[in-house]
Image (cartoon, rainbow, N blue to C red; front, side, top):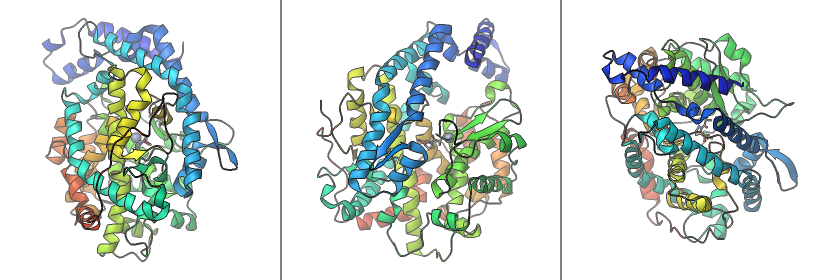
Length: 543
Ligand code: X8Z
Ligand code: ZN
C-alpha cells in the first residue's frame, strides 16, 4: 500500500470512531473543534479504488505539466523553469512571446483536457460522499470552501473584488498606455492587453515589464536582480537572507534538517516538479522547501513566501495534529508575503546593500509603488478568477464542452487580457497553470493578497514605523511576539477571531487601498485622457 492509501485507511478508522459520538454534546471547545474537524472524511470517502484513481489522475496531470518542454524561436527543449519563465520575463519580441505562450499551452493544458473531466467527476463524488447523506457539500468547490468556516465566504470574496476593481482598472489602463509605446498597432482595439506581453506566462504578476512602464525611468531600478548578480549572490544566500529577517523578529531559525533536506536549486540529473512548495513532514524538525531557485528579485521574494510557510509550521508544531494547519489557507499564504513587503522597500534594499543612490522623493516613491502594484494589484483578478472558474465547473454550471470558453470569458472580463490567437475547445488553457493539474485551491491567494496588507498595517504600527508603504519591520521584536501569539494557534481557533486579535478588524481591502494611495492619486492624473476599461467581446474565442 502506498502512503496515501495507508493514511486514508487510518483516517477512515478515526472517522468511524469519531462519528459514534454526538459532537454537540461536548462542552470542551477544543475537544469539540477537533472532533468536528475529524468528522469530515475528505479523500478517504472515495474508497480505495476511486481514491487511487484520483491520485493517479493528479499525478499524471502534474507530470504532463512538470515535464513539458517547448521550442521558442531556434531553441528547443526549454522547460518552464528557468527557460520559458526567462523568455516571458525578458523577451520583448511580440511574435516570439506569442510562440512561447501558445506552445506552452499546447504542451500542457491541451494534453490533459480529458483527464480533467474525470478528475472533476471524482472530486464531486468525494465531496458528496464526505457529506454522508446530508448536503453539506454539494460539490468539490463547496468542499474546498469549507476551510473558511463561513457559509457566505464566496459573497465576501466577491465584495472584496468589487472594492479593488476600480484600482485594478486604473493600473490596467496605465500599463496599456505604456505598452502602446512599444507595441503600437499590435495592441487590440477593444482595449484589452494581450496576455503574453505582461512579463509572465499567465499575466498574473507584471513586475518583469517594469522597465517599459516605469513612471520615472531615470531613477535606479528597484528590481535589484542585476545588483544581486554583481554582488555574487547564489541561491543559498537568498535563503539565508530570508532566515535572517525572521530571526530578527525573534522567531526561530530554520532547523538543521531544513538546510540538509530542502531542494534549493533544480537538480541536473532528474525531472522534478519545479513549482515552489513548502513541506511539513510531520515531525517537530523536518520542514523543507522544494524550489528551482534562480538568482533574481522575483525568486528572492518567493523564497520569503515559502519560508513563511515553514515558519508557520514551526509555530504550530505543538498543537494537536488536526490543528497543525493555517487559521485558513489565506493566512498560510500571507505570512511570508508580509515579510516580503518590508524586504521590497527601497529602505530595506539599501540596508542590505542591494540599492544605492535612491532617494525617497515623490518620484522614487511612485516608481516603488508602481513596482509593488505590478505584483500585488495585477494579481488580484487572476487570483480571483481561477476558483470562480473551478466553482462553476464543479457545480456543473460550466459543462465540459465549454471549459475554455468560460475560462476566456473570465480572463477577458476580470483581467482585461486577451489571448494572442483565437482559442477554442481543443485547448484547455486553465490546465496550463500549475494549480489546475495539481488540484490546489486558489482563492486563498486572492484573500492573502488582501489580508497581507491588513497584517502589514498592524505590524507597522507595532514597529512604530512611519508610512504604511515605506515601512520595514526588520528587527521588531514586538512584531515577532505578535506573530508568535496569533500564528501559533494554528487552526485551533476560528480565523475570524484570530484576524480580530491581530488587526482589530474584519477582512477588508482598505489597508491595501491605503498602502497604494500615492499611486492612485498619480494614476488618476496620468489617465486624464485615457479610456479606462475595455470591451468584452467574443472574437478571441471560436470553434
Ligand atoms: O503557488 C504559489 C507559491 C506556492 S504556495 C509559489 N503562489 C501562487 C502562484 O504562483 O500562482 C504564490 C503566489 C500565487
Ligand atoms: Zn504558498
